[in-house]
Amino acid sequence: MTEMLLETRALTMQFGGVRAVDGVDFALAEGELRCLIGPNGAGKSTFFKLITGQLRPSAGEVLYRGRPITGLEPHDIARLGMGIKTQVPNVFDGLSVRENLWLAARRRHVGRAADRSVEEQMDRLGLGALRERIVGQLAHGQRQWVELGVVLAAGPELVLLDEPAAGMTDDETRRTAELIGEINKTHALIVVEHDMQFIRAIARTVTVFNQGSVLVEGDVADVLRDPRVRDVYLGKKVAA
Amino acid sequence: MIAQVSALLRGHAGTTALALVGLGLLFGLPLGLETYVLLQVTVYVTFAILALSLGFVLGFGGILCLGQSVFFGLGAYTYGIAVTDMGDSTIPVLLSVAVPSLFAAALGYFIFWGRISDVYVGVITLTVSLIFFSVVNSTAGPQYHIGAAAIGGYNGMPNIPGINLPFEPDDTLDPNGVFYLTMGSLLVCYFGLRWLLTTTFGRVVVAVRENERRVELLGYDARRYKLLALTLGAAIAGLAGCLFANWGSFVGPSVFSVVQSAQILIWVTVGGAGTLLGPVIGSILISWLTAVLGTQQTLNASLVLGFILLVFVLVVPGGIAAVARRARTAAARLGAFGAARRIGREAHPGARP
Image 1 (cartoon, each protein chain N blue to C red):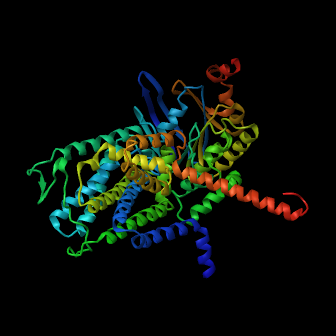
Image 2: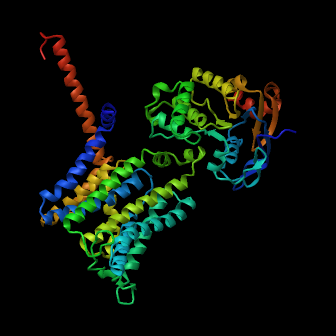
Image 3: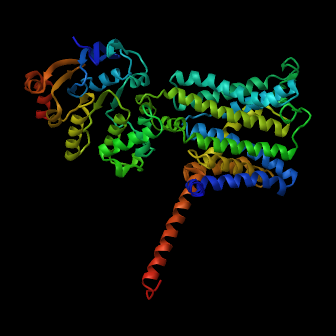
């Protein structure tokens, strides 16, 4: 068996009487693109927080390239090469777009190389026209792109995206899907998303969370046909 | 070469102009002012250094330090005690910077590694200043001394020897020399901090203020940056304390008081948090105003200062710096408008203005 890029073993997070994440075994191969879906409160965002060290798990283990990273500080984990776009845009609102990306690029590059890396990301994401704008004054969709730029400029090996298309227009969503495909050529990704169209557009393997555990995992077409998935997730959506 | 220099100067026109003003004041004021006034100005400049220290910690580090007076007082007492014991002021001056820095580093370690944030940092730092105030207050009596230096409790430490030229204890600075030292320190601190804010360290410190979580998710240890920012602020406040004790040859426990801490906060708020020049100007204006108000009996000085603070907090939260920035933008717009009108007139000479 080849070594997995990211693995969790019986990962559990208990908040009082609630098990937000309950014994999750998860494995992601190098270069893989995985989608996480599940109803609200299924534990997807908590799962991300456990992986990135923002929360300390109550039990279980997280391994990155076979190395246990459970309980490390978020900045230590980030340095191993993990980048995350959080559900609520997590950017430097008072600073310019360029400064936001520079702060990310500076982790890997020094001097001119950092500036070059910033320019590359801005070109890639079409942020060039916004470079001197203060991020807090941008529209929600634009801030999402800035955060994507920040995550990519840091040059991670594994990219976690929590609802990257939330609040985007159809056109922006389509561009995001394209971008994810492009990122996946060089990086492994885990994407949490609610938008089924979006999932269909990007996904190959899908993991479905429900009530803190993995309900089912497999090829996107099979998973979306699975009646249990329809019950917990799609069924509700249709009914709503 | 000349073109490069002039381009560099143009790119930093504001900084260059400010540096010239600063140097002009440094060398001009001792020539133009009477000694009494120069002494007064010297203490304002000392306060400006103190304001600058909190301006950096609060405005750029985003650390709500309500006990900046602790570092100021520690600097003042360290200088007073050390110079009384040693005679020569060279080492005491260095100690007055080192002791507050070390104390801030230790305090900051517990605060930041304990993940204490925002308003609780304010509570802790304020409490620490109260502790220092009451401890030092209760050290009257001959049994409280460090070496030959009596701490003096609520009476304070009188007759603190002045600063002398390095390793020349007999060459004590005259009022002009003290002014040069104080104003020079302000210039070094101010331009040093401005430079620092352009470095990676400075930019990450500002980023921590903006979004600590994002900084950590990018792989920076935010705690380390906050600790260094607090420590640097303490070093500058300690230097101000040293200069203050030297200026009046006296230090009393009121340097640790809540009033002192509040005073620094008022300087920064009125001047404008998030800028470096704002706190400097705010501290000098408020100190001058306090002195002026002290010469009359009609209005209570604290009442007037309280009113000014209220007005600034409620009406101009950005402080004097924000007002100046708005005025500059407005002036630029007016200028552009005037230029447009002129161009319009030139294009259509017959048109009425």
